[in-house]
Image (tube, rainbow, N blue to C red; front, side, top):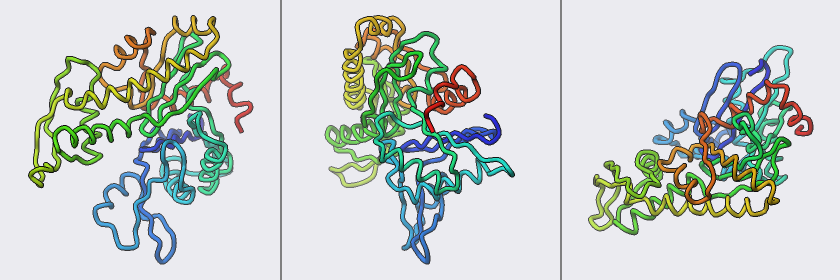
Length: 327
């Protein structure tokens, strides 16, 4: 990154910063005090630690839901705090802030993101379509692209001019966690926390029909009404995993059917490129390849693909045209 530039990805679960100081990721969570005035007590990792001992006047707030900022004031306080750590202001130099955003956000939702950055003290803010940030990873266009995040999944088609078509859906990592919780409760009368569901998904989540990887989990046995440990396998949660990814595959298929036949032929040949934390599910490439009949590729560093891709675009002249009308 050039000095005076910072990329901020406001994800549902995490905020990622890229500046000349490096790459930093913080949980997207804040603790706010309302007495004697509205103020930020802690944010990110510090907020997670402080949640266990909240004071009576303190509130835990998650300012982003499904990729949209729902609490501008809190987001601004968090950004001001994180900017001071990861992108401090420079003497006589205006900091340029770039924010990748889901293609499905409304004008009002985009204005909320801009407002949060401006309230944090940075007026030079540029919103940039997340799907377009994958261009540096793609050798041959046009292609289908997929970003599987925590709160939302983005689906689209890119060509040399940018986004041909795209949509954003809320079938993503958090929904998978909820489905895992529901499946274990319905089938085994075993209640687990959201964080436990996340750990299960990341450890043994799989789309392979013959995957029986296992792990020990902690939760509440609803029949015995007590906390205990049990062993589960990938097969115990496969229905939840399969349900969500089949829905995503069906929507990809629907998006592709809207393309002109000549573009569809090229996309069918060039394939689907996948980014986001959801791309780490075992068996993902085989699942999509079998369902969509396309070559499937997972980009390098998929969790950070958007910010790394945008960083490359900022530094390479051939991508300059994509920033011409974004301010």
